Length: 232
Image (cartoon, rainbow, N blue to C red; front, side, top):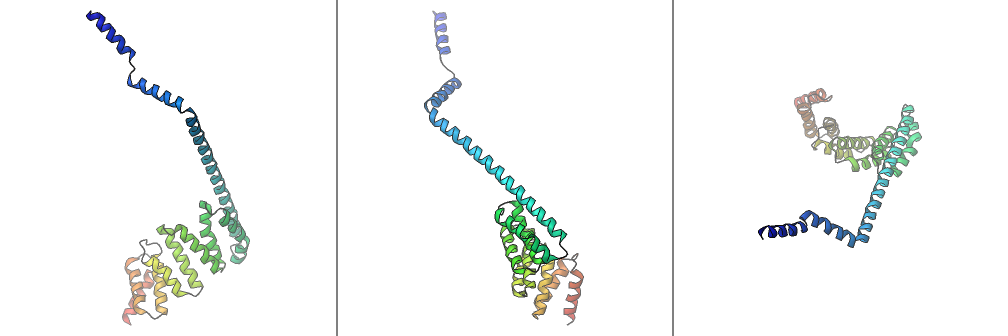
């Protein structure tokens, strides 16, 4: 009787499904019951994947087109660089196309900086200011290039004979965390303060250059100006 009981229990045990088998059966039942919904979901996933791949392909194509256009324009510009105005006239339409049609690409964003510089060289100061400002909106958060753009905007204002506006840009460099172009900004500020006969402010800028920018091209001149002011 004991042997018979063991045999029956074993048969009963064998008839029972283990947890993994039960889960598989439940999954199959679920899939069978919601077959139509699952097919819709699978189709939607495929569509999203196709759309995403298409977007990536389109973006890559736009990036390449923008890069090629900028490269061609820069080749033309370099060939005419000895005549900045002629060079500007030769490439302005190409850059305008890139900036309008490909402004969301990396090449298009960098074209802002390049074209602003071309405008500056050609004496198109209002245009240069416009594009440097747009470039600063894009890159201003990056300390290095942000300072470069602030300096460029300051130089544009000096070229337009607006020293007060120039001070606004150079002071942002002077008080910023990055040291890039800070020596130049301080030197220009010192010169502007000199012209306004603000001797204490001018002396302060020269002193900062002499103390904090020993390897700067402005260091020796700043040191001599500090000593001259001290003697006076």
